[in-house]
Length: 285
Image (cartoon, rainbow, N blue to C red):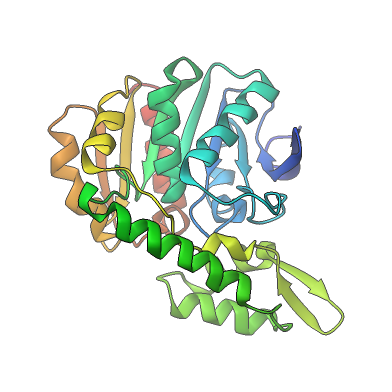
């Protein structure tokens, strides 16, 4: 594969297929990019041209982008995404791989790196640190809320076709994304029909998780990371991340922490700077 060329990526993982994008030199070290909730592989398009010395594979999680949806009897549990990575690694026979994970992708990558350190060489988290957790005393309320959200999603009828511009604008209004960045993500997330577009993403992605890790469980998983880990975050990103920095930095698990000028999708806003930090970190500088 020619350097700089961005090509489709697709691999069968048993009963479903994972799609994505790939670029760079296929003989170079592999760098897997994992996007956030309701995003897709296109969120890494601004970053990819700056990392041509790697073989970059940016996937669409199941239910996102061009990847298959889970079967009708399944749901989108956090731990099932970790299993998706295990299957992906097994299918590719990977062992020496760098990971860049944004938001939800960073949380999944954290759990994967902790459980399977022999499969990961380094971990770069983008505006993601730790896990979304809740106190044990909230378990019953979380269970009720999560299961009721499944009923609500199942009761919704099929959405009507929409226009591309209105879909992009709607995403801009509920995020800190610039219009051009939102357009990259939305274009990959829509399927053309005769009178407009419909969403490709699985509506079940919007259900609430019926269970969450407790703070103690979340800390224990993070404590088990043994591979070099760095954090890149936007100064106008998620408060969840900035609140977690002092807590996890004290555990001496973060090799480097870099605050950049930007929001939650800082890797789209500052792709060259993020790429330089990723490359420097992987090279051990």
